[in-house]
Image 1 (tube, helix red, strand yellow):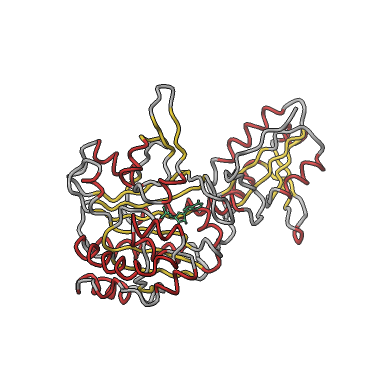
Image 2 (cartoon, helix red, strand yellow):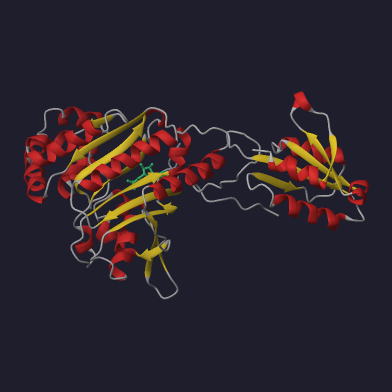
Length: 422
Ligand code: AMP
């Protein structure tokens, strides 16, 4: 029979017990650490459906963004309704808060889950990937910006990110944005013939996004373009400066007046964190303020700031020490009283919550089971045969090479032994 493979750009994440440098292990560990950080910052979890009305993303992420133009997984359901697998989390969170009539309150929320974008897959870019995100709702510019950068510095520290750099910018209020956009268009229009098709489209639909261009010609042209820094109000510039100064001993922060974000809904403060170790797709998180999104989706005026973290990319550049948990491989080599041995393993698990007991469920020789225990990275094999069940004892075999003498212990001794394992 022909095999059926996964779809392009959609990866399986399978944890491996042995301490190998497997992306899945790092992804799951990264998720655990992120959840600890979110809890430390007193944030609450929100979980929204993977499928939403297609219009939600058209109205929020924006008709002119690459995500909505080219990358949405959109289908008709059995009722011919247009539905879309979410490409990002913010629109769904905002939809949910408005729908539940919670848009008159303040919130500190986090989420974690898969997102879908029909992109060209490459290192660190998938069609299904996982994002963790934060949404701080109901607070005007100032305090939440500091909290957000504080959290990113903590995340860089806890996950020991390699070569992190946080870039920050301010897109101004709507009148500043308008004036700057006009100046940019006035500067670029006489040079239209030097722009590629993509940048020409942006010039018409969303000129700020040209600042994001990867085309070397455009980058050269932009060197002499007007800068948003000439249009920003003093308080916006001061905010950037004070964030940079406040966290300068914790994180490397750079003010980058060319930083714009790929989604249309951002206003005001925006940021991105990059690591040169990631190569071409160097951003591992990004976000900003989107004070108009709630009203744009039919809700009340609700100031908001958020960010999304690419879990797979974060896992690629984080250094995590091996987990400290001790694994015991529990080997039963009895055919008549097997059930009793399972009861013993059940009791042992409750003695010390820091140890994990892997009961080997397959039939096979002691030798093959020991091989498997080693492969899985177990520190000890606990071996129970007919004699041991009869005498209520267990053979303990250390699996590290220096100390491989085995011993037989009664259940009391084992209890103490397990209690003392870290
Ligand atoms: P965005 O929602 O586009 O601002 O992306 C936020 C973060 O999600 C990025 O900085 C990446 O780390 C991650 N990300 C975005 N698109 C992908 C993708 N196709 N594959 C993996 N990670 C992604």
